[in-house]
Length: 328
Image (cartoon, rainbow, N blue to C red; front, side, top):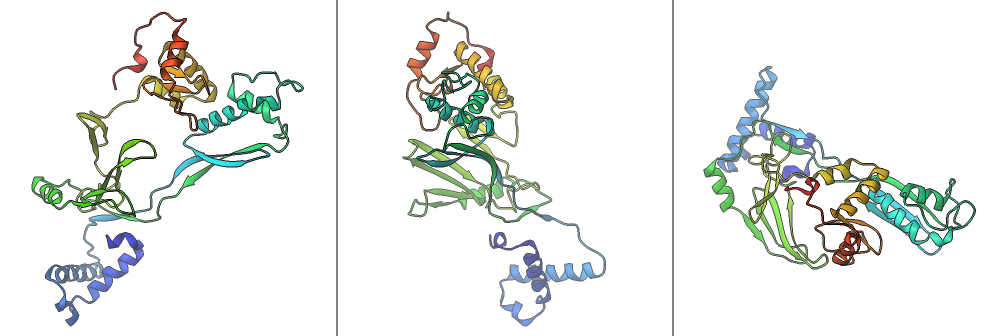
């Protein structure tokens, strides 16, 4: 939509220009729907001047806020790298892995033990020291940043009603397919919603991506700027923000890990590994969900699930599946 490329104040000026020209000779050259729209705008301007404003039917929403990420910078004598992480805990997990892999730099010196402690925070503090200068030419920074979105206001209807069957059929029949080219993958557009589906060679998956920023505000955008969306894979509803009745719920284990701080996560992960609900990578010790086939830690990715679970379960008797990993 053209309106997406203008500020709300610009759109207001353009609407008033249309109203001012409603009865000019130039308007006669416009298609009938445009002439009628110009006359409606003129009538609204006259009514507003007389203190008789019509009820608003749409509103402008400010640009969506960006997403917060945690940036972890690690530098040594030989390299200096910075990477984003979704949570502070994930960034500290990566930092702790780096510290343990380089423990020989500090192990056995002064009050530092020969082996790194199990607690991640303690290991990081011991490695870098209270003042952060225990290891020459090494250090780290951890800070949050906001990943910005395009700064664009959106127009949304205040009298939202989802399309009826006839209107929906027209929108579906008007869907457009864009074949893959040098600018991007293949895409289907329906009611302004872009659905990309393509083979992602880099990650080795078939990827489906839905983009809603260009959704048609006259038909599928609710007053809060969101789009009622349901995603189905085979016969399983994997996302439903319209009726939460069918939406998948996280397991209790996932909820516990999400709510825990760094020390609590370590305890929960240890218990989950012992119970067979997670498995610990024998190479980097990263705790992984039971269902995954390879280590999920960035940079590891070893396909060691079977061996890892076998080694960890050797001394354990068989236990029934716990409620922590119940049906989703």
